[in-house]
Image (cartoon, rainbow, N blue to C red; front, side, top):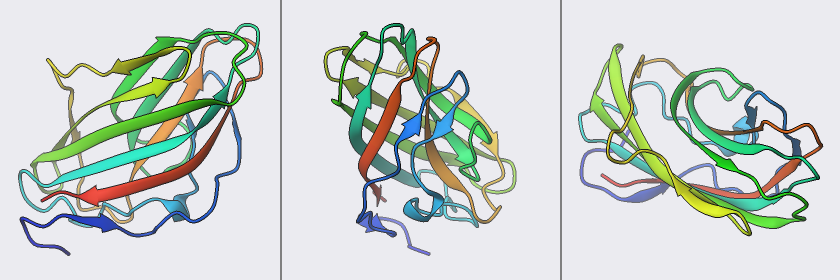
Length: 178
């Protein structure tokens, strides 16, 4: 485990595109577990420990996509499973093909341990739709067991519409910033 006051990229390093995900009304993991950094087992071992993570890919909307949702879950990376740390929801522009989708988030430990607390803040961008941030002014603080292993910061997407929408992620990086 790293000590305080370092900045370095966390393994694994993504070297392949992810399999396209068909969006549903429930959250779908957009990365294979093998492509996510394990942040369980005491990784968040002191107050202030922060991870910055960013993903980029593309999304396609059909005739009635409704809203596009992005949630960051702390858990096993199974679809719609884990503790939701934050979420962003935006009205999605219809009939957009292979448009750029990006997100950028920071997750910080406020209290370490088996009843630890994390706060997660960030934004997402969908080309042709908007750039949207989650509530920076009143961040949601989640109580989770930071000693469980393995655990992941799992980006998951959903939609409220009734047509086939897809998400295909190209890259993600995790950076330990302290």
